[in-house]
Length: 122
Image 1 (tube, rainbow, N blue to C red):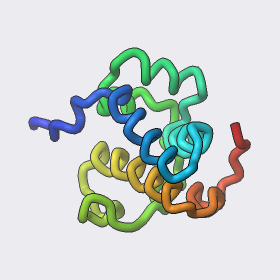
Image 2 (image 1 turned 180 degrees about the horizontal axis):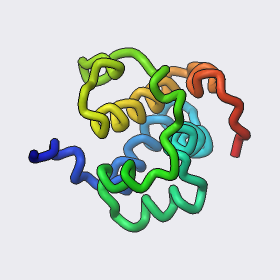
Image 3 (image 1 turned 45 degrees about the horizontal axis):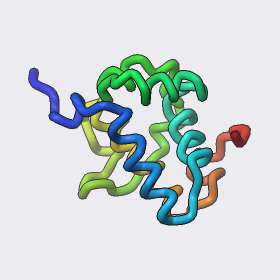
């Protein structure tokens, strides 16, 4: 089965777009890294490596140390689709990440974004 073309995009090309979006709304790289590490389990070094090595989004999520078990609590609409109704697990994970970034950009409280999880700030 052929995957969606977004699966072949590099995480390193997507990350700066997320960062630009957040910086335009007066948010920081630390906030971006916090939501991505919460979702994927990557640490700071792993995230830097994923950005630098050109791995695809498919590989980024396949290599993720641990998708957060509370990720299923992420709900809402992104790109016209309800994230909780997306059937393809990889596409759902990508859209979870998009949704988290959107919530940071909108200024939602971090405890709410992280679905009540306690995560140390960077």
